Image 1 (tube, rainbow, N blue to C red):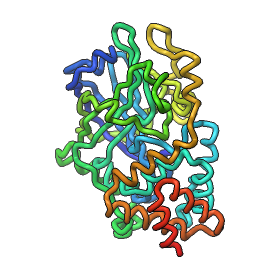
Image 2 (image 1 turned 180 degrees about the vertical axis):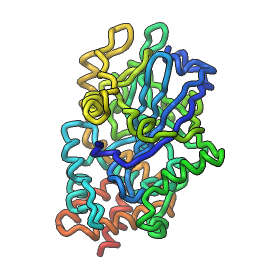
Image 3 (image 1 turned 90 degrees about the vertical axis):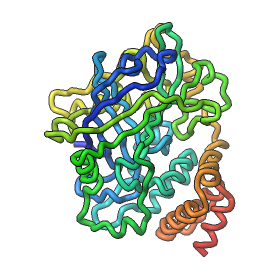
Length: 390
C-alpha cells in the first residue's frame, strides 16, 4: 500500500493537442490534432484512507498519457514548487509532516522546526498556508509537473520545459471556516464531486501549457533552472499552449483502472526525458521500485537508461549546476508571492492561518524562529504575525 498519496481517486478521458510545439519536441502525443487517451489520479499527499479531504495539504495531480509509443506519466502536484530541492532531506520531511488519527492533525513543533531549519521551503510554505492550500474540489485546482523536464525535437535540439495545467473551471478554494461546515464523516467529498460532475455531463477540463527554456540558458541564467523550490519567471519564459485535457468517464473498476495505474516519473516516451533536477532523479528511481512491491505483476516501467547524446542528456557542468543553490535567495519568491500575488484579503487569511499554527507551538524559542522566518519572507507580515501573537 501507499504511505504517501494513499487517499485519492480519479477518472479517464483524453488529451487533444491543439497547439504546435514540434519546434521543441518530436513526441507523437504533442503533434497538432492528436488525441490521446489519459488516466488521471488526484490525491492528498498526507491524508490516510478515511481521513478528511478538507485538510490543508498538497494535492497530487498525476496524468498517464496512453500513447502508441508507450505510457507517458506526468506525476505532479497542484503546486508549481515543492518544500525541498535535495532528496537527502526527504525522510526528515516525511517525519515532520506525519499526520495523526487522534484528532490532532500535526505536531506543529515538529512541523515548524523542519520548515525553519530548511529555509528553501519558504516558497511552498507561503503557498500552502495561503488560499490554495485547501482547494474546493479537484476540478477547481491547477496542476503542475513542478520539475524541469527535457524535450528533444526532430533535429536533436534540446530544451528544458515546465508543465502547467490550468483549470478551465476556475480556481476555487475553501476557507478554514468553510472546512468547519464539512462534517467529519464526509471524508470523500472531493472524490464524490468529481464522479457526480462527470455523471451529469459536466466534464472537467484543463488547458496544458509549457514554459520552454533554450538548453544553454540553464548554464548561463541567473538562477538554477532545476531548483524545485522556484518558478521560472513568465516574463522570460511565457506560457505556450499545447492542448486540452478532458475527463469524461468514471472508472468501472477504480482499483484496476486508477489505483493500479502505477504512475511513475520513469515512464517517458521518445522526445521527452528527465533533467538533472536531484528530486526528479530520486523519484524516477524510487517510484519504480515502490510499484514493484505495491502493484501485482510489477507493471511500473523500469527507470530509463541514460539518454544518448542525440536524444538528450546533460554534461557534468549542468549536473553540478543542478546542485548549486544560493541560500540567500530562498525567501525572494516567497515574498513576491505574498506581496504581489496575494491581495489584502488573501494576506489577512494567510496571517490568520500562520498565527493559529504558531499559537500551538509549545517551544517559545521555536515560535521566535518561526516569526523570524516570516520576517525574511516579508517584513510587514512578520511584524503583523508577531503582533498578533503578542
